[in-house]
Figure 1 (cartoon, one colour):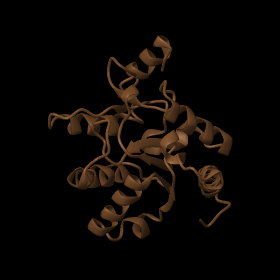
Figure 2 (cartoon, rainbow, N blue to C red; figure 1 turned 135 degrees about the horizontal axis):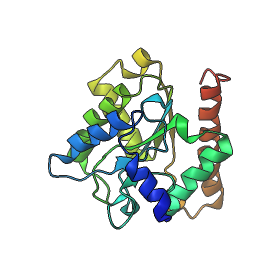
Figure 3 (cartoon, rainbow, N blue to C red; figure 1 turned 45 degrees about the horizontal axis):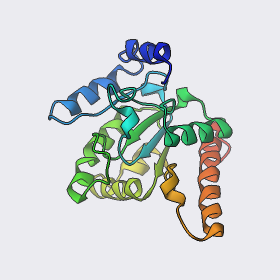
Length: 207
């Protein structure tokens, strides 16, 4: 996204048929006076089989400051890390849709009521992905909203036959610990989670 040509191409295609229902939904989220980034059309859109859920949009998703998109091609360390992990596991962009458990830009940890606000947008995203097979939840806030989602919609996982993978956030803060062994364990858990998702998408694992 640091390349103006690539960024402009993504912007011009943000309402292509495969991604339009998602970005039209984001337009709805913006009408309440809060801002949310679009999902880049380089992703699979409504044909995606994996939903990757982090906490909240980072600064490089902002219009002007950044790209205006949720995208692993954004110019920031978290995006770079998750891009590398997907590539290493062999998961391609057309299989993915990125999301945040709190979809609006706040650039801080969501509070309790804000966690609740993210439940229905997450449910809507799941409804927009008829081929969804895997939900990856990155970090404690993403884990928390999934519990709240299951409480509100108890049959969400079983009715859709979704495999849920809970792992660490891809930001550096997730690995801040004085214990080197624990730091390596967390990193390995993250890597293993991406390979597990790839196996499920290939149909070589029952999760």
